[in-house]
Length: 370
Image 1 (tube, rainbow, N blue to C red):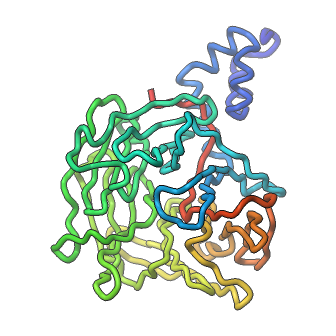
Image 2: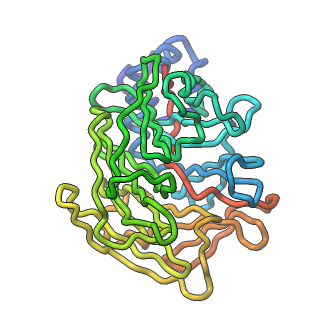
Image 3: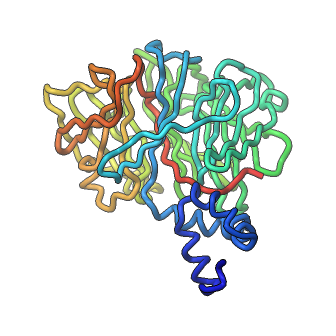
């Protein structure tokens, strides 16, 4: 079937085909099945897919309590580059309610909703390949899934293995490495105040240049302290640093990674201001932009998700690309364009719900954990 085209041309064509179509192409002939199943081809396809626009995936919660565990969750993906955005529901495996915790190279990290001592799941929604990780509580005393405020699934560019990190509210962290059988407990992180806080606000966890970054603010109310930025080296996972952020960070803020730089955006009821980290070694931040929505729109950070594409080249245009996804008064999924101050309805009416504040960038791939 493929004898009329040079082998290299077939290869270059196939790595440009989306992952879902490649699954169907495996039945064309034995040669294509062998090629598409090859590990080197899967990684070449991933490298090409990484140059395409990201999908944004977010969780839609069907209750208004906004407390864990939620009543009902669905997960949707949106391609923000499409002229007409159509949310696509992502089907999770099994009958249990699962919560999306991270996305990396087409793999999703999922957490069971209603059981505290259970396995995290690595899942590819394209191939439906599933791997259940060993229960973390078997290896780490006093660890159950919901005691970790943040989780991250990352690819170590040096060892070429995947790792799962869990960060607890008591500022301890744990790691599970692909190919291992045990979770590893890592030392307790030092707080800037030399004492333990159990009330800690965490930002999203970002992976940049093989390091994990997140912000944490210790304490609440009058005891709320300075916000710090933490980092863990993905390869040397015992190497951790913590640095105070030299400007006031709002309770509602977002940590973003765009074109190799870290940004912190303070979210106010009627506006945004964004800072970019210019020099990581010197902890040098610069305010790059500020914008007001005006009185016509008051954003509640609890009820939507704030999205900035990762391929912006100029930090001064950061706010021009911000989109805010939320449900309007008619319970329709809506996107707000911050620069143009335009609301666009992108989904039909659903039953009462809200969007969880976290979103994840995602690409379709053929990779698996194994």
